[in-house]
Image 1 (tube, rainbow, N blue to C red):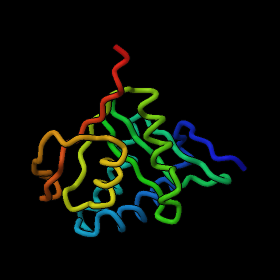
Image 2: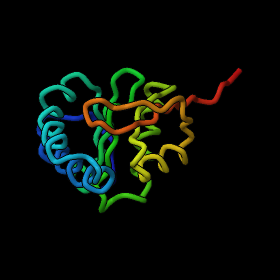
Image 3: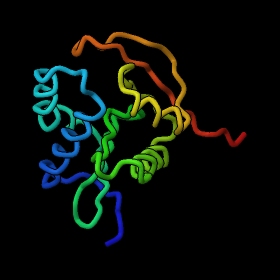
Image 4: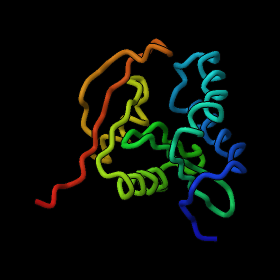
Length: 148
């Protein structure tokens, strides 16, 4: 079956949460179990209802997703089993195609995410405290190439 990027549907929730959980364990080992448990509850209750979310489906299974709040990338996660296969890039390309310039926060202590965003072409605007977790984040921006 061919991979497909499609709009999130409520029936994707369990798979999306599984992807988020497994990817978070790899990218965010520094976050407290309490914070992660709260975020897992916030995803269906707060984030998904307010975000434009796209899933990456491979052989009928959700293996990645990206959630947009306007031009803000609220989340992008790929199941660790499927990382380094270009899925994150395809999801980000899709986000750029529908939104253009993008911004996001990435934890300073997340070298996987930071490397991905740097390779994609994001630039750092500032470093600040992410108060809910107590950890520092970089604010990053990606600008599409000007055609002028």
